Image 1: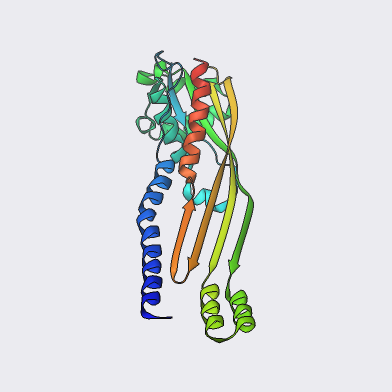
Image 2 (image 1 turned 90 degrees about the vertical axis):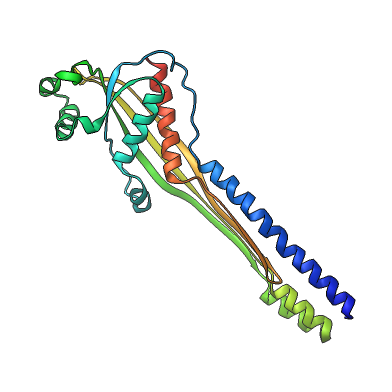
Length: 251
């Protein structure tokens, strides 16, 4: 290979390395945009909803990864945000303070007499208690595939031989490709309870699927990778939005 040919090869490799680098920022921003908060317009947001308190729900999944990232208070915070956007009169849990656990216990026991002592001051007008419970959170499928050029490169080099075989061996051996994907399914139930009678006013259940994936390639020292994922936080918030949309329709 003469000097001009070597120069052309180096130029091709240089341009091949620069293009993925320039595209990396754009791809990373696209993935980040997918994971950002996406507000939705609630159908009856122009109509004022009743005063309510969002109680911390339960996470009934035993998945350790999910419990590491999501807490019941985290979900309740999302609930307060979305119910406020839907024009409900949301009372802050921080205003309840130590009474919160007692209220939650009274609601779960269905004891309306136990709630009467809390019905004073600003809480007198409270009409509903709302909870969001995660009933399912599991990784249901996982798959991966890949190609390692080491074996193919050695075979090529042995068959062809000489300088051409050596160059081909190096090029093919440097090729690596990988692809992996995992699917999460998370299911959420909401419950609306009458603050005076502890009777269940409304309930509903929604599921969403989340794909976590990664692709990577490498050839002659030029490598690239791309990840695709919506975080569990984003997935939970979108489930809360679905639940609140249903509550909003039933104002």
